[in-house]
Length: 347
Ligand SMILES: C[S@@+](CC[C@H](N)C(=O)[O-])C[C@H]1O[C@@H](n2cnc3c(N)ncnc32)[C@H](O)[C@@H]1O
Image (cartoon, rainbow, N blue to C red; front, side, top):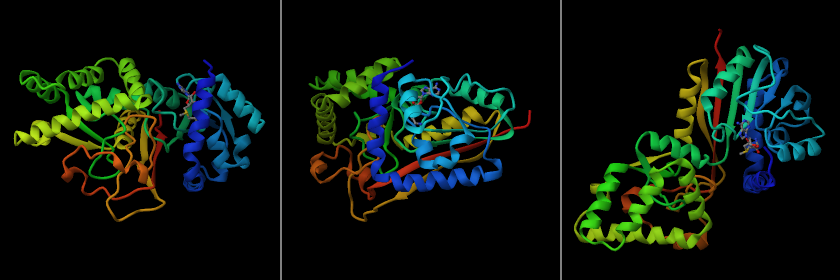
């Protein structure tokens, strides 16, 4: 597998990380130095190296302690060139290591990309020595394929087209609702000939069909603001239409604010808990600037949107939700990092 597109994406991620680079480097180094003190800093393997951000943060001292692996040839080439290192072409599901041979498997922003986390957990348990550590860090928004897979399993959909979800607490970047209730709303609108009923029905259909279709739909929404605002308008109209009937949206739909990073962390823990002790599975928040006045937060809902505040120019975006859902939203310029530390059990 190899593609220029992947490398371009990785280079874009670099730009998004830039404002938080120092903060991230500090937290990542601290975690790594604690978990792998110098006497335990060998026989490490990194999965999904990409173009080498993790090594850049850790520094040159770590270079010869780690076996680097990456399935994307172009990314690996860039990494090798930049760091004068070698990199093995391997997926996390099939690692080039013997049984019980590693002290640590490390990674940055990989576990929401892999298709089969359970296989990765099994392979990690095979390669790690008993007591060896699986350490994963996620500092970006969660890949939306992953989120949609999880939501589908629970018959839920994110209510708004990304990136327009707002929620009560800033890290709760998703507002979820039950698919059946949403279908009932569409049916009510159809019965009463609401002009937008087909638009909402399309939204529901796209989100509950297969992941690949959904992914394409999400990408389409992201790449075409006009389509996005088309759905936005339909949602706004629906909320107003209900209000004119004396009905609040949350009387029709049970709304569940949720955090995509938390959802991800829980799912990962479930996959690893069979063969690993969970040492740490939590979020660290870097508050670069925390405002006390109400401000909007650009959702990290579903994908390539990142953890940034909505800036002054974007403030014109309508609030589509009842104000009580957004009244406590008050922070911006935050960066949140999920840190997962799992310890391989004795066999
Ligand atoms: C979001 S990028 C992160 C790259 C790098 N770690 C970083 O944070 O900049 C995800 C990386 O995982 C790699 N990847 C995708 N599927 C993988 C798999 N099954 N096993 C290992 N790596 C995988 C991709 O090629 C890509 O380089």
